[in-house]
Amino acid sequence: MRNFALESDRYVNRAAAVHGLHRTHLNALGFLVAQESDAPTAGVLGHALNLSSPAVTALVDRLEKSGHVQRKRGVNDKRRVELTMTDSARVIGRQLFMPLAEHLGQALANYSPEELALVERFLREMTQATAEAKNNMTAIQDTSNSE
Picture 1 (spheres, rainbow, N blue to C red):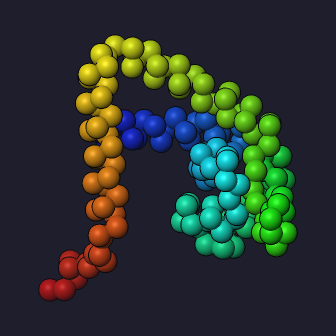
Picture 2 (picture 1 turned 120 degrees about the vertical axis):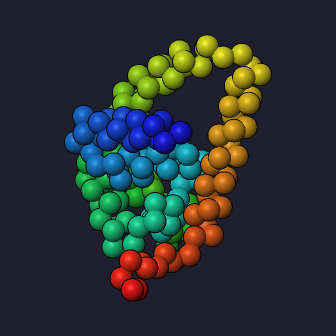
C-alpha cells in the first residue's frame, strides 16, 4: 500500500508539473470534481484541504486567474460565493488522468469480480482505519531530549 501511495503521489506530481500546476491545485480541482453537484464555497474547500483562510483565498485566486475555477454568487443566497470548475479545467483533467485510468483499467481486467470485491473491501477498511488513526492521534512528545 505504501508503494502504491508513493507511486500515486509521483504520478500526481508529474501530472501537475506537465501543466504548470502545483499539487494543491490538483487536489482542489479533484475536490471540486467530486462536489460538482454541490458547488462548494472557498471555506468548504479550505476545510477539505486543511488550508488556512488566507491560503485558500490565494489558491482560489490562482485557479481563477489560470482559468480553472470561477467564483459565482449563490442562486438562493447572493452572499454565498460558490466555486465551479471551468470546461478548460475538465479538459486538462481528462488529459492528465485518462492515461492513468486506462492503465488501471488494464490492470483491473486481470481480476475476477470476486477478487475485485475483496480488494475493494480491503481498501475501504484500510482507508477507514487510517482515518480513525488520524482522528485519534494525539500530540507526539519528543522524548529524546528528556534525559
